[in-house]
Length: 116
Length: 111
Image (cartoon, rainbow over all chains, first blue to last red; front, top):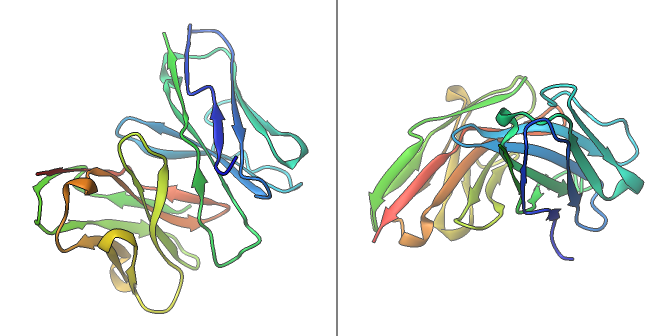
């Protein structure tokens, strides 16, 4: 597709369950980001992938959160043993980091996660 | 680490009024600054950006922002807003492999 695609768009889960969120970046984009958007809290950086380099995981809030990016394309964010405070919109973004003067991020529409 | 502070989280104004949203950043490296906008039901999208050169940056839809290095600020302005400018606006600074975003300004324009 032409844009960043995320699935599912909405996910309702019970506390303690594991969830997986998927992101398909724009074809050819080497950089991929995950952010979390909570009400009134802005966008919180979670993790950054750049090509085949080791990801920058410094934003992950706990060891219950992990992410991988297979083949330099699709990424999956996994949250284990979900807690109510994990409820938020999880946003994925990609960019063509080879264009050093164009750091524009293209965002997906996000996954609204609700933990009951 | 870089950080961004945005003020006046909720702004309500009438059409044709002028808009100014404040943004202050903290970052010790080369400064790249951005404003992103999220219209209701839509993706976040870039409004404008500053990398170097003229500190007054023009963006889409009549928006502009001024980088004032001495004040660590990058305020967003529009002289005359329209109802379609109702959205959430986020300021961001680039550094350390990421964009650090502020908490956003929810702007509501009343027809």
